[in-house]
Image 1 (tube, one colour):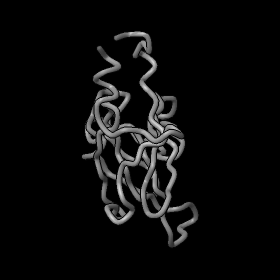
Image 2 (cartoon, one colour; image 1 turned 30 degrees about the vertical axis):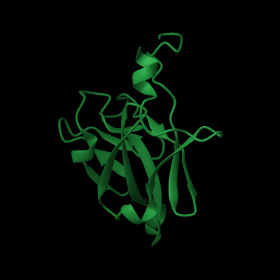
Image 3 (cartoon, helix red, strand yellow; image 1 turned 135 degrees about the horizontal axis):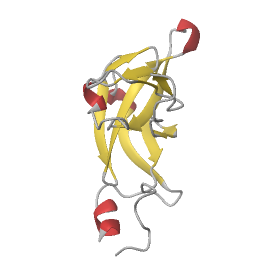
Length: 133
């Protein structure tokens, strides 16, 4: 049953990537919440390192791994997202918990961009048994 729920939305391509948004839908500093394969994911344009003028597209779990806060309501600053519940801070590229040190890691998703379309590779969560029906 879980697999049916997990796979009921946006279909993936043969290469396993799922088209999730257009680049034109993203605005620097704004968070875009989407649901892909039953998972809440946040897309954003994160500032590049060393204050370069361009941005990277990042995709990360929409739910804080610490206390289930809605990260789409958080604050994005210099490639880090702050949770609105307890102010845990995560690197949006690596998932590393920056504050407090040693906190749980945030799930991040690899991003591919083709012809202005953002594609993600989204696997089921580890707790979901792939043999369940």
